[in-house]
Length: 253
Image 1 (cartoon, one colour):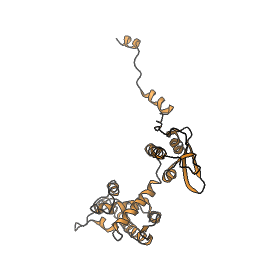
Image 2 (cartoon, helix red, strand yellow):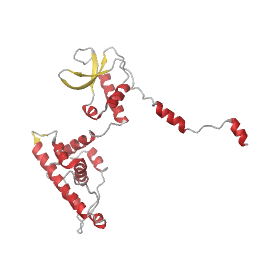
Image 3 (cartoon, rainbow, N blue to C red):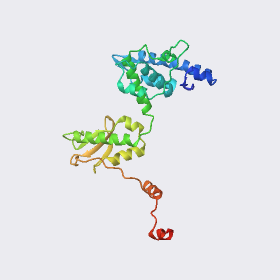
Image 4 (tube, rainbow, N blue to C red):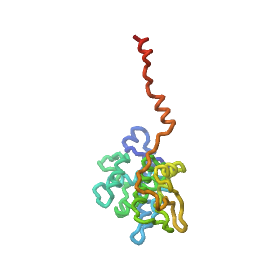
């Protein structure tokens, strides 16, 4: 199913453009994806908890494009349902889903709404699927700035040194950030934090990477501002118009 492209246009468009076969294959795959989501939620819901890898198995079979498309269509059709988080409703509106009415005025998109599972569990599944997709995306400058600010606030919020030895303040770097971060991204994060004694390190018997600063470090500091690169400065200088010299003006007169 992962090899079948998502066809987002209605049947009328497909008919006009001689693409009905592609449309039908995609529509059939959408329905299969809907069933897979329902089944995955049913099979992975235990003890009032949805398994953390529930979305992964559907994504592995159908890919991100179709899984997210089916979920967005589901949310758009359930916009009235308060059990689905507003943030997921806002996200669903960013995914193009065209109305696909048949000859009787019924919307064919309703044929692949995830409808057997409880809406609250569907909402949790959407959170998982969106997170899995996000983890495949490169970090932006804003993402790095946001993580730096979060770490700064965390380090500043502790009243006493919170490292196991009691000699440092520490804050865990977001695991999701580290999954997405390249070596350069980690360097940029390090450069934004203003502490002279800053180090990134692991802890024995604890998962993750932590930012450490010595307990006598001045924590009442702001994030460092990134300096524009020399290359960008040169490019800006080269694109700026050069003012005409006084001699040139005299010659023009």
